[in-house]
Image (cartoon, rainbow, N blue to C red):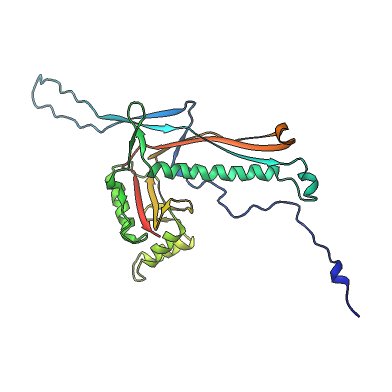
Length: 286
């Protein structure tokens, strides 16, 4: 006798949305200095180091020095994320709730990712300088470790540490190293087992520790990659100034779109590199 019961089994559907895998939190907030400003741009005036002169005689003429000065500019950039919910979606989705709140959560995730991207982009890309902020200035080649047809190696980390030490930045300031997951693997594969650093690198890759050679390692899959060259970057806190505004979200009825509900979030971000000496770009083959 045939069994017809399985043909009548029902399918249960979830009532909530599941967010796909993505970066949801900003990871670089602890390594940038955030500032608010109300204009389109903000200028940071920089004063160069000065040296004293020794007085060698009585009534000696005063020696006047003129310190070098320049400026860096941060440009306000506007971002937004917008979604539409058709007025018939509530009926068509059945028990599945409308994704309005989930859309806003998704917007917040995008905001957090953009905060990180703005930070490391400011470290890598040319900054705007000059009295009017119209002159681009690239990171000096002395702050760049070329890929040399290799990935991230212990030698590159040692060189990056030396470059930052030569910069005479404030002692004890936090340092960050932003790398791709692949480059952490490369670091482990190129560190000899007999090396005293091998166990530390292994623990770094496995997530047991997050600091090595004075750098806090932050993984990012968003780092720029051109052809087979991945650009990793390290900097000392204080080298990057970031301007950010809080994300605001609103919902409105779009009468021009058949009464669809529009969910829109917007925010402003900007950043600039104020200390070249505190930034090191590490090119890696990937």
